[in-house]
Image 1: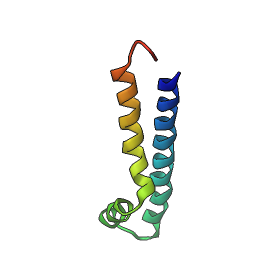
Image 2: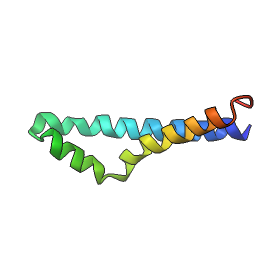
Image 3: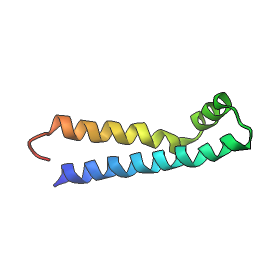
Length: 68
């Protein structure tokens, strides 16, 4: 049961980070270049939730495949 909860936490973090990254893409039509965009999202903590969530989900799936 704890593994499912850990997986859901990772999923929630990944969704939060992905939505933030996509939301910040609205700066691109305003004249921000791709380089400036990546520099901007590098400084935002919520954008780091996407890779952290993916790592947590991968850990749960591949470390405990029989219990999930």
